[in-house]
Image (cartoon, rainbow, N blue to C red; front, side, top):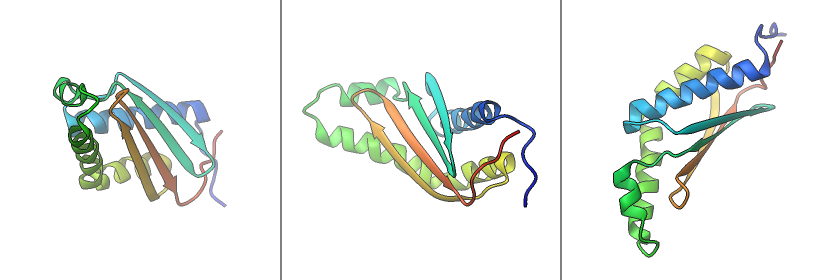
Length: 126
Protein backbone atom coordinates (compact mmCIF):
# COMPACT_ATOMS: atom_id res chain seq x y z
CA UNK A 1 0.00 0.00 0.00
CA UNK A 2 1.25 3.47 -0.91
CA UNK A 3 2.16 5.84 1.91
CA UNK A 4 -0.27 8.70 2.43
CA UNK A 5 0.63 12.15 1.19
CA UNK A 6 1.96 14.61 3.73
CA UNK A 7 -0.31 17.36 2.46
CA UNK A 8 -3.98 17.95 3.13
CA UNK A 9 -6.79 17.75 0.60
CA UNK A 10 -7.07 21.54 0.54
CA UNK A 11 -3.34 21.97 -0.07
CA UNK A 12 -3.43 19.44 -2.91
CA UNK A 13 -6.49 21.13 -4.46
CA UNK A 14 -4.67 24.48 -4.31
CA UNK A 15 -1.51 23.04 -5.89
CA UNK A 16 -3.51 21.37 -8.68
CA UNK A 17 -5.34 24.67 -9.23
CA UNK A 18 -1.98 26.38 -9.73
CA UNK A 19 -0.98 23.71 -12.25
CA UNK A 20 -4.14 24.14 -14.34
CA UNK A 21 -3.93 27.95 -14.15
CA UNK A 22 -0.32 27.88 -15.39
CA UNK A 23 -1.28 25.38 -18.10
CA UNK A 24 -4.08 27.69 -19.30
CA UNK A 25 -1.76 30.72 -19.35
CA UNK A 26 0.89 28.84 -21.30
CA UNK A 27 -1.59 27.49 -23.86
CA UNK A 28 -4.09 30.28 -24.43
CA UNK A 29 -2.09 33.37 -23.55
CA UNK A 30 -4.04 34.13 -20.41
CA UNK A 31 -5.23 32.29 -17.38
CA UNK A 32 -8.67 32.12 -15.82
CA UNK A 33 -9.87 34.90 -13.55
CA UNK A 34 -10.82 32.29 -10.95
CA UNK A 35 -10.01 28.62 -10.48
CA UNK A 36 -11.80 26.19 -8.18
CA UNK A 37 -10.48 22.65 -7.73
CA UNK A 38 -12.37 19.73 -6.22
CA UNK A 39 -11.00 16.27 -5.49
CA UNK A 40 -13.55 13.49 -5.33
CA UNK A 41 -12.21 9.94 -5.02
CA UNK A 42 -10.21 9.35 -8.24
CA UNK A 43 -11.41 12.54 -9.94
CA UNK A 44 -10.05 16.07 -10.01
CA UNK A 45 -12.64 18.61 -11.12
CA UNK A 46 -11.61 22.10 -12.19
CA UNK A 47 -14.00 25.01 -12.67
CA UNK A 48 -12.26 27.84 -14.49
CA UNK A 49 -14.07 31.18 -14.65
CA UNK A 50 -13.30 34.06 -17.00
CA UNK A 51 -11.31 32.07 -19.54
CA UNK A 52 -12.28 33.80 -22.78
CA UNK A 53 -9.97 36.34 -24.40
CA UNK A 54 -11.40 39.64 -25.65
CA UNK A 55 -11.33 38.34 -29.20
CA UNK A 56 -13.24 35.20 -28.18
CA UNK A 57 -15.77 37.30 -26.25
CA UNK A 58 -16.37 39.46 -29.34
CA UNK A 59 -16.82 36.39 -31.54
CA UNK A 60 -19.46 34.83 -29.30
CA UNK A 61 -21.16 38.06 -28.20
CA UNK A 62 -23.93 37.68 -30.75
CA UNK A 63 -26.00 34.79 -29.41
CA UNK A 64 -27.06 33.88 -32.94
CA UNK A 65 -23.52 33.04 -34.07
CA UNK A 66 -23.43 29.29 -33.42
CA UNK A 67 -20.46 28.77 -35.73
CA UNK A 68 -18.29 31.18 -33.70
CA UNK A 69 -19.29 29.51 -30.43
CA UNK A 70 -18.43 26.08 -31.84
CA UNK A 71 -15.06 27.35 -33.13
CA UNK A 72 -14.11 28.82 -29.75
CA UNK A 73 -15.13 25.64 -27.94
CA UNK A 74 -13.27 23.41 -30.40
CA UNK A 75 -10.11 25.54 -30.25
CA UNK A 76 -10.09 25.44 -26.44
CA UNK A 77 -10.53 21.67 -26.43
CA UNK A 78 -7.82 21.19 -29.08
CA UNK A 79 -5.37 23.29 -27.04
CA UNK A 80 -5.79 20.88 -24.14
CA UNK A 81 -5.58 17.75 -26.30
CA UNK A 82 -2.49 18.99 -28.17
CA UNK A 83 -0.68 19.76 -24.91
CA UNK A 84 -2.10 16.93 -22.83
CA UNK A 85 1.34 15.38 -22.20
CA UNK A 86 2.48 18.53 -20.40
CA UNK A 87 -0.60 18.51 -18.17
CA UNK A 88 -0.27 14.78 -17.49
CA UNK A 89 3.39 15.16 -16.49
CA UNK A 90 2.62 18.04 -14.10
CA UNK A 91 -0.29 16.18 -12.47
CA UNK A 92 1.73 12.96 -12.16
CA UNK A 93 4.68 14.83 -10.66
CA UNK A 94 2.44 16.24 -7.92
CA UNK A 95 0.02 13.37 -7.29
CA UNK A 96 2.01 10.27 -8.33
CA UNK A 97 -1.08 9.27 -10.33
CA UNK A 98 -1.63 8.85 -14.06
CA UNK A 99 -4.54 10.46 -15.87
CA UNK A 100 -6.85 7.72 -17.20
CA UNK A 101 -9.21 10.09 -18.96
CA UNK A 102 -9.81 13.78 -19.44
CA UNK A 103 -13.18 15.43 -20.05
CA UNK A 104 -13.67 19.10 -20.91
CA UNK A 105 -16.44 21.50 -21.82
CA UNK A 106 -16.46 25.25 -22.39
CA UNK A 107 -19.41 27.57 -21.90
CA UNK A 108 -19.08 30.50 -24.25
CA UNK A 109 -22.13 32.19 -22.72
CA UNK A 110 -20.53 32.62 -19.29
CA UNK A 111 -16.84 32.12 -20.12
CA UNK A 112 -16.32 29.05 -17.96
CA UNK A 113 -14.53 25.78 -18.54
CA UNK A 114 -15.10 22.54 -16.66
CA UNK A 115 -12.25 20.05 -16.79
CA UNK A 116 -12.45 16.61 -15.17
CA UNK A 117 -9.41 14.37 -14.78
CA UNK A 118 -10.00 10.72 -13.90
CA UNK A 119 -6.91 9.28 -12.25
CA UNK A 120 -5.71 5.69 -12.17
CA UNK A 121 -6.13 5.53 -8.36
CA UNK A 122 -7.88 7.64 -5.72
CA UNK A 123 -5.78 10.31 -4.03
CA UNK A 124 -4.79 10.04 -0.37
CA UNK A 125 -4.22 12.87 2.09
CA UNK A 126 -2.58 13.57 5.43
